[in-house]
Structure formats: structure tokens, C-alpha cells
Length: 270
Image (cartoon, rainbow, N blue to C red; front, side):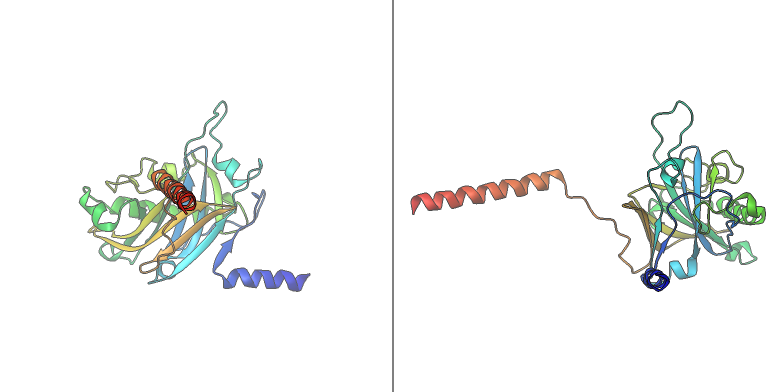
């Protein structure tokens, strides 16, 4: 039995997929730790918010790199889904869950430091949409990472990974740190967040000059788990499936019908 478990674990690691446990934990001693250069997945929108440290940006967004993460979702009262869709007493319809990926690298000098963030637009379109100010969100991301790591056991793991769950009113929540209007602490003119099923463009922003560079993409889709894929420039694995428009389906159905009629006509004339 132990051998089989080890083989399954090795197969998961070899596939490059990180899978967390299915149920939320209570009283877990492990706490989230965030390092300079790490990318963080944030899920928010209702009473509770979830954070998962994905690892180093330099590896996740290397050229042609693809990394996959299976975030537990579930449907029972002790699941991540139930926690994130909790919108309070008397609330019957929760808000849509938003997601964002963010991180930072502090070189010691602002002019050579970077903010990493997901955007609804690529770097060129984000810059063209209006004024970008990366210093505020850079400082917010850096401060958040340092403070939440220092807080230690106050932010225990939610599922057994390098993650945590907190209320939206917490001083270290995404809502408190960046706001939820999509501007990421007022630094960007376009939505720096997406809904489940959306793709985000990963951008590096110079902390002082606010110049933007495309560094990859990320997609988040809901299956048996919440599946996150992070891709460096050159990888196409993050492009979500494009739904077939209803008009195309109707057109194809019509063609099948016409072919059937033509065949019947041919049989009659013959």
C-alpha cells in the first residue's frame, strides 16, 4: 500500500501538477510564508479570501514554461468553495469570485525592482489605456508579503499547502491591501483581476518607471478542482477553450439536415 502511494505521489510530481488536500483544516500549525520573487494566487469577492503561494516567478514564467496547480474546491460545508461563496447572514446570492496573481522583486533600488501582476489586457494595451503607477502596488505587495510571513501562525495553512484563508475585513486581506475595483491599489487603468474561466496576461512593471513587459499568461478554470495553469512566454497551454457559438452549432445542424435531404432525394430519383 505504501509503495502504491509513493508511486502515485511520484507520478503527480512528475506531471508538474500541485494538488492540495480537499478539505479545509483547523488548528494547522503550518503557516503561509511568502518570499521575494514568489507569485501569489488570490481568490476573493465575498466574506472570505484565499491565498496560495505558487513559487518563484523566475521558474513559473520562464520562457516556454508551463506549471499546473489543482486547488481543492469541493461542495460540502467544510470546503473552499463554501468558504469563498459565504456572503454573510441573509445573503442568498454571493458575488462572483475574482482572482488575481501578484508578486514582487525588491533589488534594493526602486528603479530596478519589479511588480508582477495579472492583467485583463497585455502590457501594450494596459499602458495605452491610461496612466500606470506601479510604485503603490509594488510597496503594497512587498509590505503584505513581509507582514503576513512575520505574523506566522496567525495565518495557518487552509488545506495543507503554502496557503491561507482569511476574512475580507482582515488588515492583510486582498480587499484591505489592494481593493476590489480592479485597479490594484490605484496603480492601473484596466482590470487587474478576472473571473473563474478567464485568462490573465502576466506583466512585469518597473517599480519606479512603471514600464510594462509581457512575461506570460495564466488561466483558471473549474473542473473537479479549481485548475490554475501558469505559462511563460512561448507556452500556449494557458489559452482556455473557446466555446463554439450557437450560430455555428445551428449552421452545422442545418448542413446535416440538407445532406440528409439530398441523400433521400437521390434515392427517390434513382
